[in-house]
Length: 501
View (cartoon, rainbow, N blue to C red):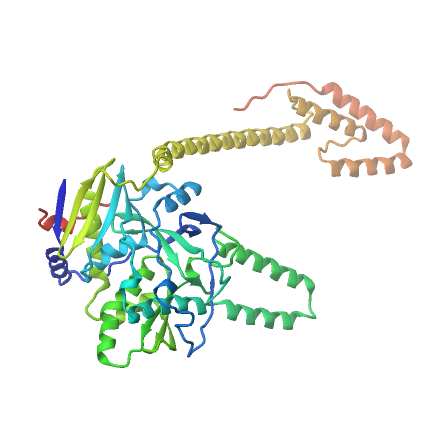
C-alpha cells in the first residue's frame, strides 16, 4: 500500500478557504497526565531545574573544545512514554495519536519547512503511535559557526537554571490535548520552571508575618497549613516539587536583531518553531537570550507564548493548525489496525507506505492496551456495585431511622401503641423504668431531669411516690402489643477535497 499527498495543493486549498472563514483555530488547553525524567532508555523520578536569570555579558562558549563538546541527542524510543502511561494506568485507547512532540513538529511545520523527514507508525485499533526515525548527526561535519550555535544554546540553558550540574537527566511532561476530532498524547521535554507569583507571595507573607507577629500564634499555624495545601495542589500529584504545567519555561537563544534581514529571518522562520514547540506542550512563557556574533549574551527577553503569532511574518498559526490536522486525518484514513507504516516527507510529496519492519510498541504495552477496555468496564461495574451497596445502606439507615423515630413516637404514646422489635421493647423497658417517676420521656437528658425531680420529690412526700408507682403499674397493665410493618463530532474534512494518488 502506497498513498501520497501533494501538500502544495492542500496548502492552497486551506488558504483559499481561510478567505471565507477566518475563525481562530486552537487546541484544547493541554492537561499534564504524567511526568518523568530519563537518560538514554532509563526512567527516573521527575526532577526539573528551576529558572534563574542569567548574567548579561556571559560568554556562551565557556568549556567549548570542538565537536566532542556537544552531546548528541540519542534517539529515545516511544516505549519510555508507553511504559509511563501503563504505570499511571491511563486509558490510552481514547487517544487517536501518541507521540513525542518532535513528530508533531515535523508534521505541522512542514507547511513552511522543506526539510526531509521520516516518521514510523504503528496502529492498534483507533490509536496511532508515532516514532521518529532520526539519523544520528555527525557534528564533525559542521563548521565552527554551527557548532558554536548549538553549544551556546546548551550553555545558555545551563546558566539559566538552578540544579545539580552533574545531573544529566532530561525532564519530560506527558500532556493530553485535542485538535478538532483528533485527541492526542504528547511527550514533551521541558527546560525548567518558574513560579511567576513566587516573589509576590513571599513579600505578602513577610508583610503579613510582620503585621501579625504580636497578634496570635494560631494565625501562623493557619497560614502554614494553607501554604502546605497550596504546595500540594501545585505538585499535580506527580512529585515533590512545587510546580505544575503553568510554571513550565522554554529557553531559546537567537542572534542580536541588529538589521532588517536578521529581523525578517527571525520572525518568519525561527519564531514559528519557538511558538509551536511551546504552544503544543502547554508552556506559557518563553525566555530568549540574545547574543552577538561572538556568542556573548547581551539581552534577555521574556515572551508569553500566545503573543508570538502577533509578531509573525509570512506564517499564520490558524493555517498551520488546519494543515497539521489534515495530515493527521490523512494518516487516520489510510492506516489499518495491526499494521505498521512509514510516513516520509520530500517536498512537496507526503508518502505513506506500509512496512513490516516497524516495531514501536512491545508485548507488554500491547497486552495493556487490549485489556484496558475490560479493566475499565470492570472498574465501572465495581463502582456501580459499590454505589448500589451504598444506596442499600442508605435505605437501611433510613429505615432504621424511621423505625427509631417511630419507636420514639410509640414510646411517647405508649399508653396507646406498642412495638414488636427488640429495640422498641428495650426502649419501652427503659421508659417503664423511668415511669417509676411518672415520666414518659425517651432521651437521657429528660431521664436525668426526671431522676433529679424524683429525688427532690422523694424528700417531699412519700405518698406522692406511692401514687406514682400505682400510676406506673396501671400504665403497665394497660400496655399491650400491636404490630407495625415498613418497607467525535464529525466535520467535513478538507483533505477529502485534495487529490490523493
